[in-house]
Amino acid sequence: MAEMIARIRRGHRGPLAAVRAHEDRDALRLGASCLAVAITLLWCNCALAAEPRVLLLRGWFGVFSTGMDSLASELKAKGIKTEVASHLYWSTALKDIVKERAAGNTGPLVLVGHSQGANNVIDMARSLEARKIPVDLLVTLAPFMQDPLPSNVVRAVNYYQSPGWGAPLTVDRGFHGKLSNINVGDDWSIAHISIDKSTKIHADIAREIAAVLQAKEKEGVDEANPLTASAQPSSPQKKFPPQAQAQ
Image (tube, rainbow, N blue to C red; front, side):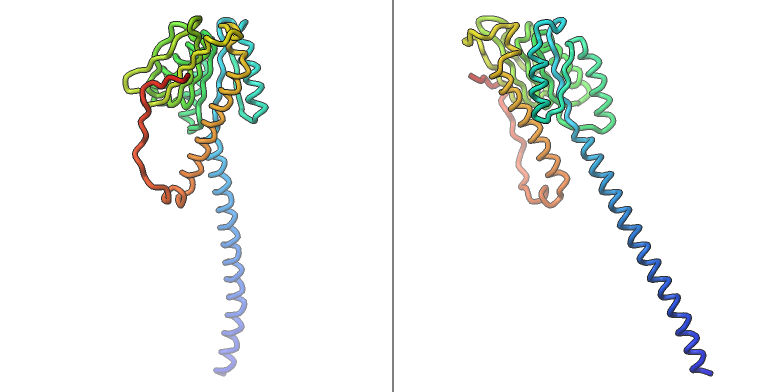
């Protein structure tokens, strides 16, 4: 009798163990699937958060700023998503940028403008400063009677003509970014209505933008990798001089 009971128990234990093993395998598969979904969502969110915004603004009526369109095409050919618009678009673009930041997009922000568009990208930076939104790169081509740069600009490049149109940019107190004022007055081929079409200036701007995007991409990778981040020694943040003259 005892042997029969033992056999019955062994018989019940076998199927039950198989069921439990099957349930364990299902749980593992479900866990793996959830992990894969979580990783995918995290990657998508990181990609969204790193989405860059490169905006080029033309000057008055856009008639003499066709070089902004050419520059946009060159940047797109390099794989850099770029938007070009009239300087009148700046207030609308400002609202879009604020909405994007509120939605979690903290990707690099690049503003480039020619003539009145140059003045307006400075206006945009000023408005973004009040909302604590940094401008990673601001490039101005021949602005006129421009305002100082606000403190939220990380890197700025100003092309002007002396003698001619424009002047060196100045900065607000508390500005800790890097500013390069570049005088192109000695280049006879450049005038106010052609400075936006200069192939050399286009190449310089493209390099500046690529450097900003690469730095931001590396920064995002380092922040996403705790091993890399912990391996880097901590160091005080560099303070750039308020204004740097580029010859």
